[in-house]
Every structure is written in structure tokens, then in C-alpha cells.
Length: 147
Image (tube, rainbow, N blue to C red; front, side, top):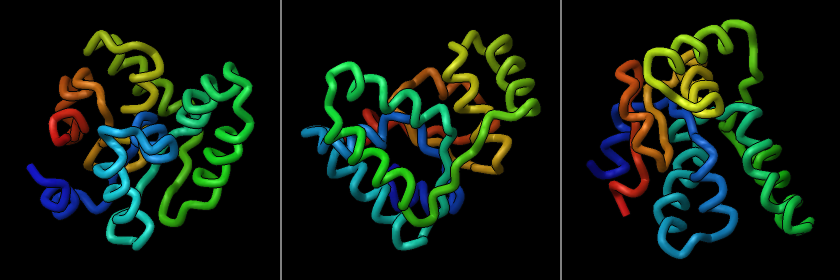
């Protein structure tokens, strides 16, 4: 399934942490694919959302490596990117995450991410972890399947 077909079916998508990392760090295998994702978001062809948990997950490694340049790059991208909404953790999202975690044996961060997507009305979920394919409430695009 090409990316453009995914976007034809899903004008409102949710991004897990990995696409941000691949895009900002220009990952040799995934950058071109992620550049296309972010290009479609930037032009407004699709609307995207992600959880504030994404920022936490993204910044751990740059802080660990004392790479303030990467911290600044991520903040610059994440706080100014057009057509990208930030979803805060709420009681409803926590409740849905607990239910999904129990039903699908997900790790807590994964459950929060997928619950945030569903709660915000996204119909497509972009990630690089096949565990999300277990969730039938949202169509999951795994980057590895397309690169």
C-alpha cells in the first residue's frame, strides 16, 4: 500500500514517536519515507496529531548524549510544525489506554499512544512497531513494511 493510498483513506493521522526521530535525524533508511509524511502534513493534505508522551520519548536520547543541538531541533520541529496537534494525557485517554493494554498486552507507552490516537479521532496510525497491528479500531501503517 503506497503512502498516498493511506492518506486518501485517512486525512487525520496520528504519529508515533519513530517518524519524528527518523525525520529529524535523517535516518538513512527511513528519512525519505518520513519526509513524504511530513511534507503531506506541512501542506495540509493531512492533519496529524501526537501525544505529549512523544516529546518525552524523543528527548531521552539527546539528553542522555548531552546533544543540545538535537534537543533544539526536535523542539523547533515539534512546536512549530503546521497541521500537527498535541494531545495531552487525560483521564479518558488513561482509561482507554488501560483497557487496550489489558486486551492487547501492550506496554504502557504504546497503550497511551494508541489511546491518544483513537480518542483524538485519527483513523490512521503511523509507527514502526507491528504491535499496533493488534488494534482493530485504527489502521496501522508500519514504516518497515514500506521501506
